[in-house]
Length: 217
Image 1 (cartoon, helix red, strand yellow):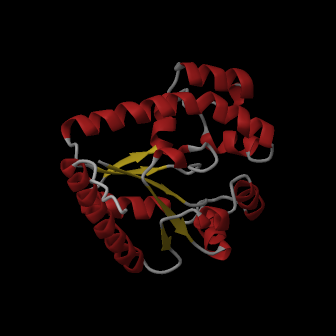
Image 2 (cartoon, rainbow, N blue to C red; image 1 turned 180 degrees about the vertical axis):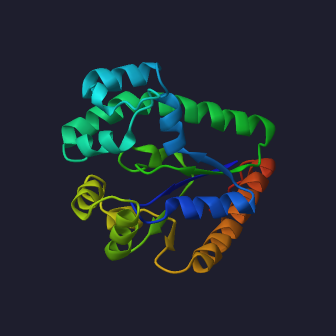
Image 3 (cartoon, rainbow, N blue to C red; image 1 turned 60 degrees about the vertical axis):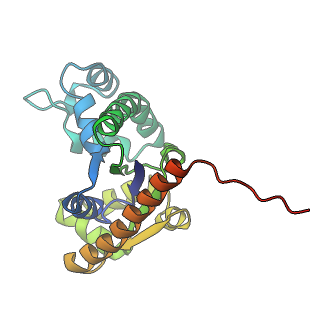
């Protein structure tokens, strides 16, 4: 099994890259989806979030209004840290459960974990390879504005994360996502091929066992 951490920054297009990996046959664990799951109405995390940030962030169907919550936490690092403190334990647990489930029925699996805060929460130490999705600030801002996020809020959110260039320094692979979907797909296909090859090599090394060292006298 090969576990790959995929990250980037807001507006870089991580979801697009992740979808391409999934199309090619990789298993995908999306941490944004896990966060939604562990904060469903009346869950422990949901109760703590509502208690700490107020009932004003709750929609009519009792789900958390992510936009309202984002407006609160991305302008205050202490509040953002508190939110992460509430949500991450449940996400870590769910991630481990799904990973073990995949491993049990497909020991040779290639798992892509889409983790926006891969470095910020220290999960980079628990993956075999790191893929960073990159895009220019201009492209990122345009994409976020197209989603209805005003420029000032977009900049605040981007500044709340580790700078993209710092993530790139620790990456095994970088996907440049300023161009067309076709260009991004081509890069993903190349990386997928290399990762699949790496997974096969690891499996072979395990079968062969530890190599014998030759003594030089």
